[in-house]
Length: 309
Image (cartoon, rainbow, N blue to C red; front, side, top):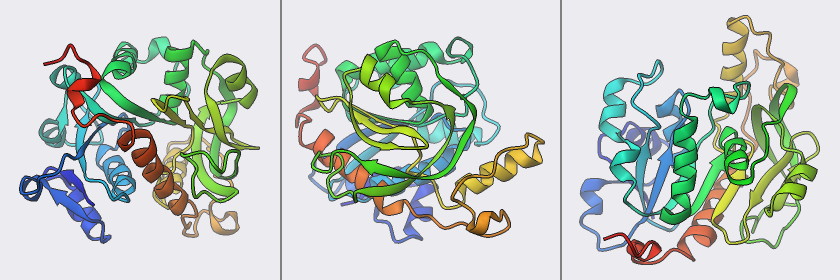
């Protein structure tokens, strides 16, 4: 089944060119199906690119999804047209009385910024607290994981000495868990972050189950036992060239970035990299949608919070 998005969203044509089944609002209204309502809080600067990446992963499911895009505030974006934001994105005030089957919070380029210095830190805290009553399952990516661990578990920010950038091998610790069902014993996933996620710290100070780790990248996939929270410290949504674009951007800015590990063929930045993590990324999102959202969400979303009308 397809994802349902507004007719004019740029992702419609982009994904259709990849033979991804996308259903517009116009066609969806003709079907008598209760789609899963999934909210995406997009914190990345290049919002259209990020939309394409996540919608691609969400499309790999037999479930019909009603996607709604959320922005953190009304500030102008240097990387996304204002018209696009005003047309396709909602503000939190507009949706806070609604319930959702799923919430995805993307990463953000804030690895070296203290939480107290993040301009929208109060909003992030409010949304994560709101999600406890209004969302069946919340999935956080990269920086959003660090934010969630601080807000929900009071874990302090931990920062690496240098940026972790590259494609790393991960170990599937719980092959029979619902979220890792179908995963290989080892799999690849990209990382691009300054945040540190030590396995021992997660074990000592949270009640999360750690489902996959990496010797180089630390904890990768974590989940609460009630399935309400999933944390992914890497970027399974990345395109093949995303890490390379980040590296070249930082190099042109004079930041002397480290070459992404295990990424460019023969460590030659002039050569085109290939994605080796797509199948795992699609399976991760399909498992989340099925086992952590669809199987436990109420048919009538109003049942999630009886005080709502």
